[in-house]
Structure formats: C-alpha cells, structure tokens
Length: 310
Image 1: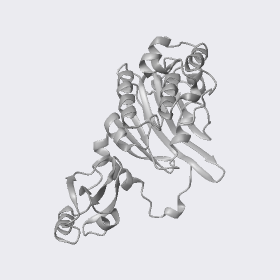
Image 2: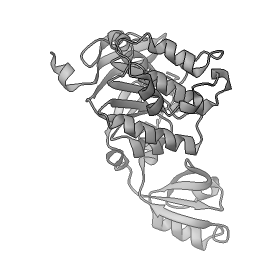
Image 3: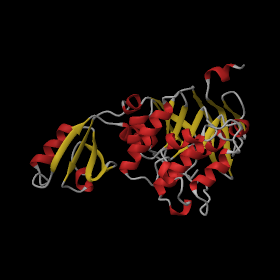
Image 4: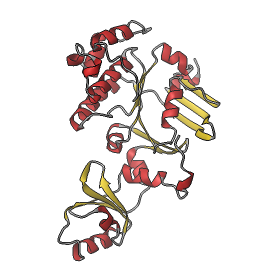
C-alpha cells in the first residue's frame, strides 16, 4: 500500500492541461485527505471544471499525475471509489426515476443498498415520477442519488445546489452533512460562497489554473482588512462613491441590500449619516469581512484583458 493510499483521498501534482492556446490548468497541486469536506471556489475560467473532470478520468493531464485513493481516476470511477455529481450530468427524460436508478444500480461493482441511496438523497417521493417532470432542484437530487449508487468513499459535486430555492438548498445540505458524517470525503464546487463558508472545513480557491488560497473560510477571510457595511435604501453606486469605501454591490444573500467593503468604515459611516444619503439609508449593519470579500480580493486581476474562459 502506497503512502498516497494512506494519506490522500485525492492527489493532483503538477497537473497541466491546455485547450488550444488556453492553459486551463497550470501546474496545479492539490491534495485532499480522507474525510475532509472541501469547497472548491474560483471565478469562471479558473480551471475548476477541468480539475474535476481529471479527478474522474474524463480528461487526462498533459503533465503531472492524478490519483484517487492511490489509484488512477478511471479505475476509481469504474470500481465506485469516487462518485460524481456533475452539473450537466445527463438524465434519461423518458424514464421514471426508479427505472433509471435500478438500471444504473445494477452496473455498480459494490453498490450501496437502493433503500439507503433513496434515504440519503431524500428522493422517495420522486421515485415513481418521470425524469422529464422533475424541477431543476429535483433533478439535482436525482443526480446526487446517482453519485451515491456505487457507495463511494469520495464524492465530487459540481454546483450541487444549482436550480434549488433556498429551502431546497438548506434541505440538501442537511442530507449532505449526514452523508459526510459517515467519513466520506466530499469535494464540492459552488458559486454560493455562503455555502462554502458554512459547510466546508477547508476552502480552496483556484484562479488561472492554480491554487491561490487554501485554508478554512476564516483563515482566507483574514486576508482582507477593514470592515463591511450592509444597508438598504441607497443604490450601490452612490455608496461606492463614499469616502472610505473600497467597493459596493448587491449582497449575495439579499439583493435588496447593498454590501460595501470599507478601508475606513468610520469615514464611510460619517458620510452616510451626515451627508445627502442620510434621509434614505436604513437597516445599516457593520461586520468583519467574510469569504466573499476575500474571494473577490484574491481573484481580482490588474490585467483583466488577459482573462480567458477556461
């Protein structure tokens, strides 16, 4: 048994991959230990999808190595060591959920009992339905069930809550916590930064094909100094023009609120309450910067014209 088998659920070392002249992965190094819950973040084109494709053997590296629990990704996928929930994973629209899952279940080398799959993915009420009748969020729950069929030790989830409303997202993560409690390794990519901050014990930020930050959500958030002000009643562009405000935009969790990152919150608050905006602003909150601010700071580019879709 190799050291990698003992210590790494996933190991990518010096991995490169290009598509034409675009370098999707540029010497990517990433190691994930068994039992970790890891959020994989990055702007569009950062290389997240390419890295995930390599973890399941859909795309080979041009240079470097990729291992899943000490074996190659193709073998890990075939034997059920790794289960994958891809955002664009195709379903069979004319089939009933039960029929499709039974067919896929029969192909697994060491399947999880079907009753356990149904319970862990919380899809009992979906089993008799046709795939074509499912909502976007319900389809995601079925994709999650497919990822569990092989009783995997590693779960790889690409934007697992896309298409879900807030209630469905909350229910999904309740189920995911139960799955993770069994000791499985969980790696998920998401654009919902509050999910990463709340659910992951470790956050990995990718940009331009490399890891640019790696730690807990709190550790990564600590790279941003200053304070954050959220408020209602005033447009973001007017808040951005205040002294001491570095940037301002809609709050990700409530687009009726403006979220402003401040280098000098005292100056910003003074201008807010004594200037022309004072009569309109309300519900003002001041807090420490979070993962969202750190993510934007870490991945901002001085040379935006060099950005490429990866």
